[in-house]
Image (spheres, rainbow, N blue to C red):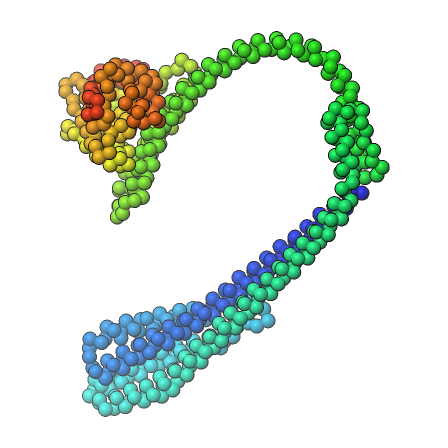
Length: 535
């Protein structure tokens, strides 16, 4: 049976793949272990090299100090001593470390000999310290000649006669260990390459041979089945597939013949039902026309909704990205500055979330209004934060932004996020339609009853004939269309609606090609407003 041949092929192929994977894993694991061994050997070699350099530097400075009797050399000798004992401690830590697991099977490292060498070095350094102190004592007692003789004898017998052979033997031993580890690593890599190549070739030969055998066994039945399906697909429902085998292909051919017989019966029934279907199609066509009109209306609502999303989400996203980019480019910033930037990003993210909730609410209810959260707050803080965001938005076009505000708080009652949204709309328009290198001025003032915010730019301005229409939904002046193609005409109408809900107003004065001034007026907060219900 074909399924059994295919199962055997899959099982053996899986075995080859599993063997190859195990082989490659073992090889990579061995390479990693031998690489660690090589690194450990080279690290020990470096430790002995450093110990030799620091020891001789220390011996030289101590000898020079004893010979010249220069007190200023004391600091240099002490510094060399510290470095020497650091190198000694590092060598001692390396010597007491346990061997890498699974690495030294058959040839454990000579840890006792290494520990003995470290002990010899430690004992020699302790003895040398005592000898140097003894020479120093003789020199201080005035026995200069005797001190020099002792120093010369120590240098020849101990440093040159004992320490030098000891450190040379240790370095040579570590050099041999490092070379041996490197050679073993190279041999293992070469062996792994050959094992992988042989395994891959064996698997490829088996796959090719099995594939050829399987293909020769299924080619004829597949050709017969393909011819039969082509005949049936062309409309010859009386055609029957003839296949005299006892495998899955014969079973499939039998089912194709049954399917053709059923299709022939169904074809006759379909011919009878076509007339009834055509009548029903005519009835449904009228219903589809009605549904199509409804879909057009829904599509128009969807377009307006997407336009609202693109307009309202663009400005907060731009400011968040600008805040992050400016902060990342800056240098030498303290934690407070990062905290301020993150606080502004959090506030913008909260405002962005509120925009999304509003837009989703508007999408689900056709006649819904914007929701407001009324509270008392300082308008000066809101304007100051908005100006900082404008500065981030205006960096791309090298536009400067300044704030002219009265000292002290300006208390109003309203939805802080909605009023921030109005400022964003005006600031975004000012940055987008200002000429590069221009200037934007934001001013805040208050009298006995009202607070006034003015935003003046040096941009393209608004034609006089369009001033009465700029607060209409989707309206854009001609020069704005020529300047930028990505506007939607939704920002100013929404700003006007928000200001109206706050009992305020928004006005504009503009001269084409000279700039525009948008003015927002809000009633100041009074204690009587606490008793009013939220709108």
